[in-house]
Image 1 (cartoon, protein in one colour):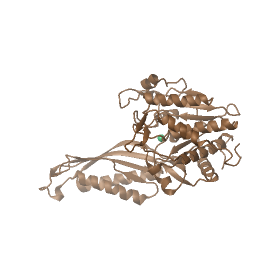
Image 2: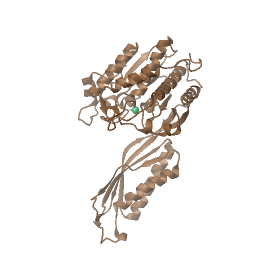
Image 3: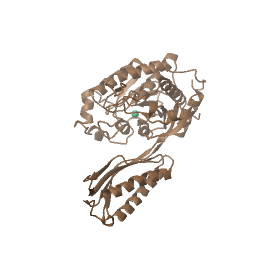
Image 4: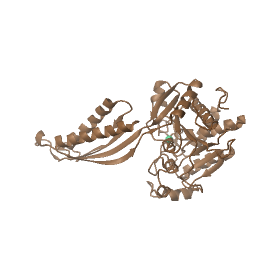
Length: 425
Ligand SMILES: [Zn+2]
């Protein structure tokens, strides 16, 4: 089927939208503007009900459903050739507390739509096709995020994940057992032949650029630090400027430096101070202490390290100039992930062949695909998020974009599943 011309094989977009709506009704919440979202924190009763619905659909489609010890669910459709590793797609169905209807869900349900489309046409691929959803992608109840896919890919010991205590004091292991999703299959799991994830962009770029399909080249690396500046609180009227050890002044220098640095470095570098606290935080007292966070992101590891180094130099200079002590604490560090060039090309070729304007871009958010990239050639497909809104009940992707994304996913999965090796476009 791989070399037939599109659009000979297309998904049923309205059936996919119907499934998205049905899943969204589980843990449904209303946004301030009357929009409808979902709240299914990982391993809660609502997550269980969402899982039950998706697993029921998997069984309806005749898939071989396997649940591993961390509650990751992999549903497989057999291929023509026994013994070949499957081509896998999927995402997650847990949400943040005030989540939308598309984040994660789209990638899983589009995978089921691909399966149903092939069933309808009586097509069997050379390799098996697998549709997966991974436990606790959001990390809103249990840290770290992307936990299920991280353990699946061997990046975190399963015992450690199971022992993780959530914000409400219970563990991943006890909640998995309670909701009946601690399965018998081992985790880490078997490496697929390739992995492709369809996801909403969660940013405004595609809509702004008038692109329907985002060809995702990789995931940005993330560097989080907490910086503590210790100076000396003193009288705002009587302390001469030259004798001050002003933590607020030092913090302000760090904030403005970071914007300059990101602008100067260009490319995909961004820098954010999202939290800034002054002590004692009074109108007539020179701040004795400042605590701020720095979020640096780049798609290029060397450039990200360069930005970290430039910040380090700045901190030394500021400490010297202002007579303050500056200490740093690492909060998180993830290296950038580059997706597989061949699959990136396949995604782009499918979008072009189907007449969709596309755009290459990196992901600014983390996704299960970046963990699967440790195991197999991997890439992602993005569709536009209206006004870039996500993690919000107002999160929205147009039905025609949902359908376009699923059709691109379908074509890429078919190309991958009908070849022994990852093909050139
Ligand atoms: Zn997501």
